[in-house]
Length: 331
Image 1 (tube, rainbow, N blue to C red):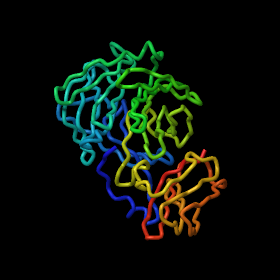
Image 2 (image 1 turned 30 degrees about the horizontal axis):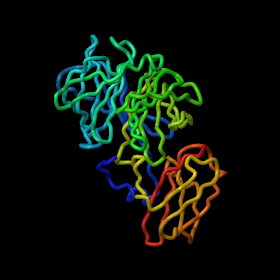
Image 3 (image 1 turned 30 degrees about the vertical axis):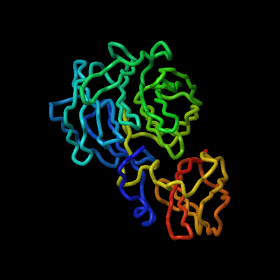
Image 4 (image 1 turned 180 degrees about the vertical axis):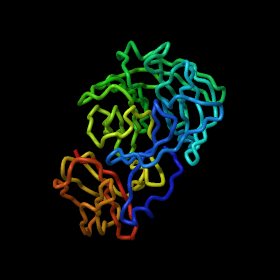
């Protein structure tokens, strides 16, 4: 996925950073910034819609082609609009009227927009294509016959397998082939709270950051759920964007120069590189260094059995002085 990124390596060299994400809520009119580790609200920015007042935001997504951010807003009385959101000042510009109660929007890596209707819609669980040029919505497939509809509809596009993923209810993940419209149901390893669902795909680890109800998780493409932190927005969240100023945990790019496996890991990892690795530093999502080891090889094994389950960042300093970082999940 092509995205314009702020430099993160300079932040890592300072020794500490805090992974954060932006999100919205169906109950509030603001953009929130939360800390991934504990779900604490770090900032609240009111959203100002140029076309008038609204009751809440039901989706948040970024178009990877032009890096524009879009939200679906509930105007009340069953009226939903799509608007373009300025993440810097919270202003939102009306784009189009949505013909149904939209619970989630997502973009493919080509910039194609899709939306899904939620609970209380005239036609729940319908996947739509959204044309931002002609400002029209077209029904693609009714997903209710394939998986029983429940609260908590969420969409995310997987850039690795080119499938759209749908999270619904307490225990169902579903894949949708956008070319053939074939669907596959995937069971989850544990039940979720069935409201306030959102998922965001992370290419480096081929999984999703997920929020469901009052907690955040990582979610594998095969349905494995691993808890990360509580969520302070008790009404639930509907969309995630990483705060680039503090590093998208999916986009701390190693540019293929280092490889870490297995990932997720249960206690030991192997690190390989095209160049010798001088040192490896592991930090948690609070920026605290939890392991530091000197290396002098292009292939290294690292014992991390003493680390708690969760998300970590492995920073390798190569022989040429370059710093490269990858995210690792310990299960």
